Image 1 (cartoon, rainbow, N blue to C red):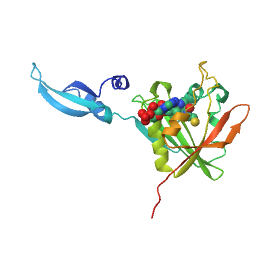
Image 2 (cartoon, helix red, strand yellow; image 1 turned 180 degrees about the vertical axis):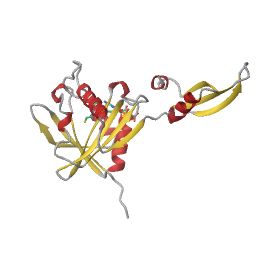
Image 3 (cartoon, protein in one colour; image 1 turned 90 degrees about the horizontal axis):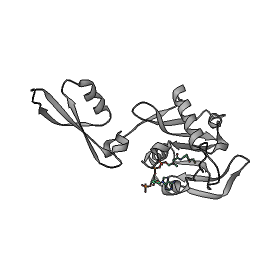
Length: 212
Ligand SMILES: CC(C)(COP(=O)(O)OP(=O)(O)OC[C@H]1O[C@@H](n2cnc3c(N)ncnc32)[C@H](O)[C@@H]1OP(=O)(O)O)[C@@H](O)C(=O)NCCC(=O)NCCS
């Protein structure tokens, strides 16, 4: 509901009964602040809570391993958001590596809405990322990439740089390349993965800061 509201307004107010402590706690947990106290005509004390768009953040969890529920939901996102050719290949991503992290963003019902991972393979750090269609364009992808940047000084990914593949819903998979260019990635145009399953180009992000 708040995701929908914040597409149109920057502030949402909640009027909560003074005796309804459960709702007061729940609303505070998602970033609301008590802004007003008033007396009703029945002489009860009620409260007004305010939640602002800038404070509306989904919970990001940094985890070494996924719960079975998270693994299933990420597998579902993988199958929905990536091209059909990659269907059911999520479990292969981290095969053969023991150094990896998951960054999971969940909605208030603890359902995964976005996920990223970084992992080590052949002495380099690689990543993968998915944002659920329903939540695209709300800054979650950028948030996850910023997290990866804060954890790594250099990392790589394979990116499909064309719109030829189909997704499971029959629509074309749109290349996310404009997103990566905005996040400061370099395209290594001469390094490509060309197989029966995927045609992709290697991208790189490197921290530009030098420490003296
Ligand atoms: C690519 C992806 C991770 C982007 O996540 P997102 O949450 O929609 O992106 P954000 O809302 O954080 O966007 C950040 C910026 O990039 C821009 N952007 C995002 N996707 C874009 C696209 N496809 N084309 C152009 N710009 C795009 C946004 O407009 C925003 O710009 P701004 O900072 O100027 O406002 C998401 O679309 C996705 O999961 N796609 C399907 C799976 C996938 O392709 N993963 C990557 C595999 S390599």
